[in-house]
Length: 480
Image (cartoon, rainbow, N blue to C red; front, side, top):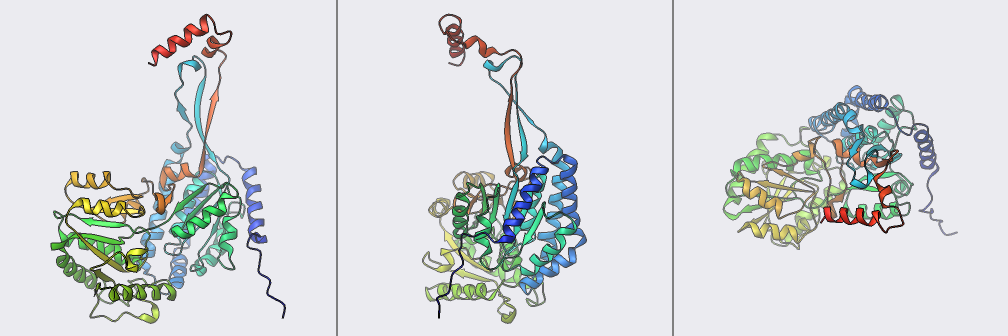
């Protein structure tokens, strides 16, 4: 039998190449869309969400097996409808050229400005955990900046991908927007296209591979990665309120959020109080964990990984607290109860990688320096959460740590504020999007200098003896 011939991993599939070529043609024919054209694109994107709301929610639910309808409507539909309308509201201001000051050598008639212009064809790689939001949120910035977009969905979002493929042509030409379902190694080929910008959301490990692929074309990238985002509750903050807010985030989407609280710092004397409140909150909010309000783990591989993570922690001495001891989650549907993990050590899997599930390790601390030293010794997280009513203490934590973003006295919410930039730092990513920052990310801020009929620099022309030297010495003295 002849040996199998492996596909050339460097070859770009015809459907990708053809779509890219078509988008390039569209961009070259519409290099700088007007405010009216960009607004029309954003309104069409808004209509796509509004007019197909139920179908989008159903597709995500089919991909998850069980995905809370409320959570999809809130976190994916509502927030993105708001984000699009916010971009429409501010777009005229964002597009306005920025005047820049000149130095004395350019007076009296020159001028300088910065003009934001479209980059061209933008690629977007979408994860499975918030597949509508992580396609539409960056796409809002892409369209606001006047670009075209090719979007590759996750292999775990096949139902949604097929739906978007059928819906997009009803609102946009293929030269403006096209969606791809994943499969057959499409991801690496997609990121090897010579995009004018690539936006990727995923793990740090995959982000490194994506960046390597993009380097061959010097494609600029925005990487939204993850990591282990910590939270710290100060002694002054009510433990019941901290538990309410932290457990809301930890159970939202079954804990499968890149900005989730990945581990929690508590004063030693607050641990039992937190456990009592967490158990109460979980059972009050989800009296029936199997009724559809609580989201399933995305696939069997992830479910098995989370179970093994718990077993690893237990085998190494951790104390595991199941918050739903009186309920039996449906394992066939991959419904997994939230668990608190106590007495954790750094050699446990639960502390080695991003959890992406309903597990919450708790570490105790004696003083604030212990917390910032630990955070500083580990890769920079995507988010950091501080719970305290002491403004000086929250400022101290912000000044002495580094993360992609911060929410004080709550979790996650900074990521949903349209007028705040969102993005990681170091291991948790690079670049920003949302609002004005998203517009800027997908624009070329093009500097333009225009010389006038008279120019002061003529006084500095050679030969340099005499007036040019006197003028230069005068300028040096002014700036000394």
